[in-house]
Length: 431
Image 1 (spheres, helix red, strand yellow):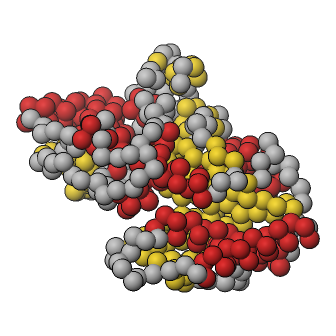
Image 2 (cartoon, rainbow, N blue to C red; image 1 turned 180 degrees about the vertical axis):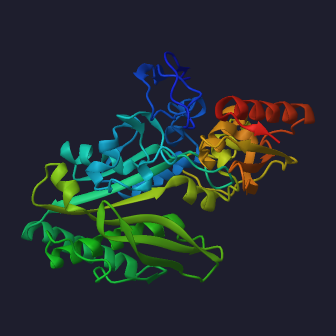
């Protein structure tokens, strides 16, 4: 397990990290210097070596294998280090300088020059630069997030990419593949609500030939419609076709861009984002005269639907009652083994005027104390004193284990630790 070693001089007051000191942090067996950007927590560092998507029989491993089997000719990559530079994670993919994803409230930083990847797209340039043209990469990704049944600071994505030569031979390859996929989908029980491959609001890139972009975008859609049919087909009510809906979207690293939704069990579910790869990404990869597409899908989101898993924390459970329900290569409905009672506790406090506390700061603190025993965290009240301008916040923490009943003494002790850490790290005044 990774260990934090905080040594040296204190940080300046006025930031949420003012309680920490500069020093080193041990990540996957190696020490790295810390600085004012460092915000990664021990709980997050403990997840780095787990790699649920590689564990046999785990639902995420089965789903990864199912996606890979649909693209058998592609290179299948996994177990890639989660450590990347902000330049890899953002700049090489054309993220604007003011993009909120760069913020320490949204992303985990080892220091100003090193972070935990927030998406598998962070590896696109590296993989293309190695000469791969068709590939899938599955990995754990990290984003600071709220605590509830569908959000977790660690989740897993599969990135899929295909590039071809932007010449007659490459376009003929795409046309032939489009004909094959169209024939397959024409004979399949699927209804597709499409949008134009190009439009004024989802345009062709200036460096690309619109006819080439049309072919690439069409290949992207056909390829993903076929994948979605593989994942969700046959799971509808008898006689009902699978319904898929394409929506225009905006991403820094693709243009045109799309999101895809599936109508499943009575509601539309967002499945993935995708688009034609931005020319800057290809230029940064040193692959001239190429054109292609990329997509990224979240494994937990799809697995929760396919397996009927109600809480994202369950993917991290080591309880045999969870793990024994699954076999590699098989998708079955999760059988809840119990519903343990919840116990909620409120913590209300005054925040010093020189401290900014983001909701994700509070959630990270709670995770470090109580781990996956916390089911959700919600703000129930905020108030600013008209004279002192001090801010009062009240959070409600719902404690509920997925595996056992919690005693009142255990819950009280955990909550006392949360309160103590709040006072220590943020200098709050408990109300």
